[in-house]
Image (cartoon, rainbow, N blue to C red; front, side):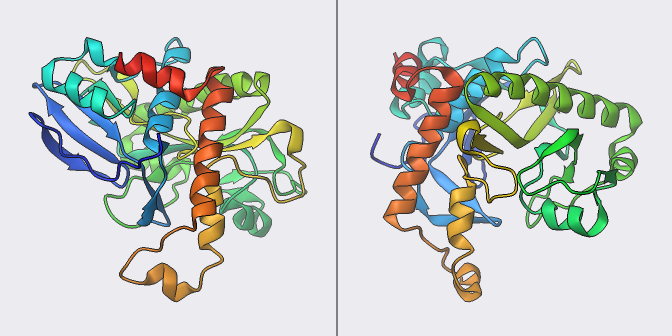
Length: 308
């Protein structure tokens, strides 16, 4: 899996959306082929470098979690095997080497559902300043990388362009109503609790994660897009994690950390920054390692099954 897939143009399928990482194709009236490319984004930009095999990791990690957490909340997945997909979708999925799944269409809830179990990332300064994160009060003295008393739900807007904006729970209720706000908070926390327990068994710490949800035509609330991947989550290895010290990232933070060493003008230049080869290769290796730990097997085995 040495070649990176940056762009897709699939025979016999209409591409209806292109996001920072995912390309979405229509399959009939109520199905989608969701393709995770190897593009990588950070700070609201798609970078000039791709991470070989990254799309397969995102897809197969998500598949693993969708299966494991299906009893907690249903999801949009129809099939991850090319052999179970119709015509053009099957051919495309085989050619994409584990990067594509067939999904049900859903009406997206316009909120990023973020759950945090540890103190890390951009909210650290807010906590140190306010003693709270998005209206959730926390006790003093939590160190960088320290565990919170209990996981907290810190949603944001889901911006089509630009930055997502943090929401307090009261603001979320105002935006989508109390019933749906309560429901997505409960689902998000239940998913985080179940996933954290599995990660702990595998030597991983789930620091935080971003979930997306939608409604099927019959009104069922389901998880959509990706789930608990190194793109949408922060992972630490339990054996090397020490609260109070800068955590070692097993996720996209490795890329963010590199970009933050660049001068501001490089980050804001019209042409997106590229990554050194050592950052590309190390990111690819860490993503694959997260899959191995979560799934208990190698990525190539999952790809072989998906494309058989």
